Image 1: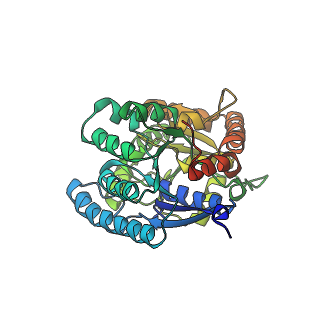
Image 2 (image 1 turned 90 degrees about the horizontal axis):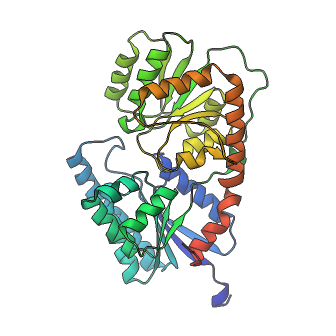
Image 3 (image 1 turned 90 degrees about the vertical axis):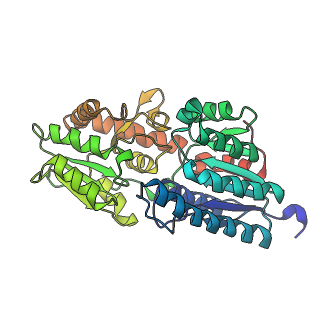
Length: 374
């Protein structure tokens, strides 16, 4: 094989589950995409946390554990890059405390003359650009060290250019393997209480407190159940149980569910609610959209772009931390099955048009082969 026929070698630096999270799901999707692309050879360095719980919120433990994790990640990149130098390094990040690690990895790529793609999976880039401070300074450095910067929504694209005007910024939303998420709903489900579903880490930043508060108020006049599906600290779950009421039968925190059980759980629900304080381009929404499930979500990150199709709403958006609006949106969908069906069908069509492997394959090929344009 001559040099011109050699595949493009990609070193993907990103979290590989477990534990499962949004970027980890993206990693699995990218690996599936790459397997369908001729001329692409891909290797991974997993940045999944190994030294701390994902829900650890105390700053000093995060710093100490993060330092160990960063050394591990950087060592993995050095080993893989020196073993077989890639054509492109694709680094996926949630920024924050990881910015120091990212700067080191991107510096290694620059010293070794490896083209670097920096993929920002964050929903607060606009706020960071506006308030300045150490995180903005860290982002300026990582954007400067990157050849191409990938963001998830238009607001983040503008914010990245404000932080580093010379950055080559590409807007590229997350995507899904639609063949794995086609709805297989029973045409005549057995009678049961309407089901509101939350899937994700049971964390304050996911808006779970507002969700339980809204549902506690709603439960006084509606018959339904709220399922919280996802891992969380027992103390957080206990606080939510207290908010719901010790004997609230409608409140059902079921903990983490196996990956293979998420789809049947969504198919059994009447609507999905994701009231996060911030998001990037959440996979749980893409999965629910693929199944034609009605969705209530906060207007953060790429979510407004996701829940729109042909100029029409494909879900109901509410402001973050607004318990009253959240309650009204859930109530509206619980009492209007026709609206649930209409929004769910629009959401399903939106996924098929914009968020599948086929819809983004050429964009990723451009990224990896160096043919991107801002």
